[in-house]
Image 1 (cartoon, rainbow, N blue to C red):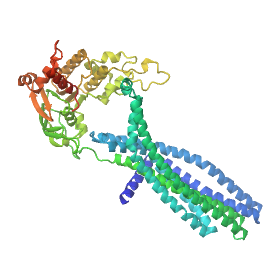
Image 2 (image 1 turned 45 degrees about the vertical axis):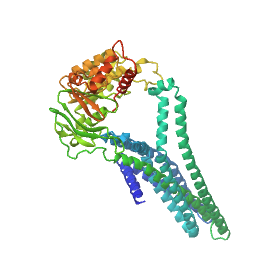
Image 3 (image 1 turned 180 degrees about the vertical axis):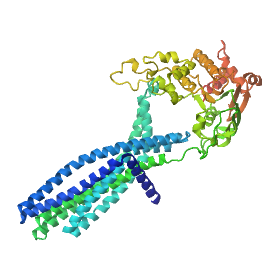
Image 4 (image 1 turned 30 degrees about the vertical axis):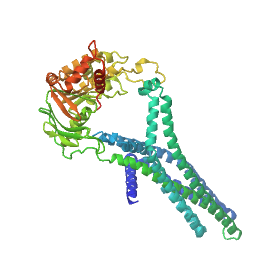
Length: 626
């Protein structure tokens, strides 16, 4: 419970600080407005009592007119203040949503590595944190609402005490079970949201598959619509059933609480009427008592509901607080070492890596030196560790054992941003942004995004300049149809969808824009290209990386034969290394795979069991996922 209280307190402080930093003036105005709204009903009740007693007593006309004027003025204020509070509440909400959204995604961008985004629990927390950004203003405005309800309840409780202390105690005691029940329901609702989070995330996954172009072809070809829809509805049914159980609990609890309130109010009214008959209470007292009981019960209900809602919002907001205060997934040195320009090379020294203690080793004691200015090719079967090695070079992860040295400097001693500033690259799973052609290349170096000459120079190196320049709006043409409006949906100039090979060249241009970096990583840069385009792209890459340090990963061994050094990974370690001629002379794994691929281009191919075995081996090398 103590830990729970600390977390709720931290969430409350964060919400208050966020509101004050982004909307201090509206918060002050909102507080003053709610204070007026809290006291107005009490003033109206007392003025009404005095008017009734004056009418049945000996009050003068002047006194009655003064009371009537006060009652009318209070009514005008009470009518205006809710509109002011809604306006100010909206200002607070917009300011806090903007602030929390900015801080949340700034926090996710601060994670140096990839580990959080491959953790299902973190992804569930992040989804709830996004929901929490919209709850921040609710916490602040609900807190003000609690103060308002407390002031109103206090005023009417004081009025009830004047009439009957005993009835006041009964009304207050009846609110205790309501508070306990509502807090329990609030906590159960919060727990439920966490429990059904994975099912809701899977539901979103299936709905995305069924509604986006990326999966549309396979879904239609294999007739998967019904299958995927069935899975979506199963997840939806799971979440709905859990919510229905929660709704039933709320219905039964709140129904019993409403019955208790009705019994207390009814009993109080009977007592007041009986007291008036005996002369203990005046007619004005009965009016005041009736209004006060209803107001106290309503105020207490609002207070209890507000406390429960605030508790619920604070718990959800706690996921936001947890994300923005999360420790980096990689150790970032407090006093980072400077990263020099690469002059000698990059050394992997006894590097071991696995994604967690429950996963198998991907790399096992890799020793490798990438000389400065050399073109190094990395080849091997699927799962050999090629792509994992690239992730370590970019410091998306740190080695489990061993070290990676950049001209002698351990990558763990430098800032990840400083390292990545020295690297360029294109990956097999490159991004296809729903941006303009200019921006799709410009994101490779955002400082050059407005320099069309640099962008076109990079596009020319990738062989895609003529294509992009000839688009309806040139480099300002959107490479998507996602954002076309209904009015211009039929206008081809509003967006163009590129082919896979054209996207590949555009991604390569993005990498070429960072042409002054120390290391270029080319992970399957020609996958999906036809033979002519592949030959052209590799010729352009050879020209671009001449004299520069580069790492090329490819399963098409004819594209790596001109590399200065070819490294063969096998079972997480370096099995062979050397030039193409050296490795062919060794007649090992590389030579076998090279001859196997080359044989596919001969007019006749072998048949029989051995050929089948070799074809299977060739298929296993058809992608690079290690």
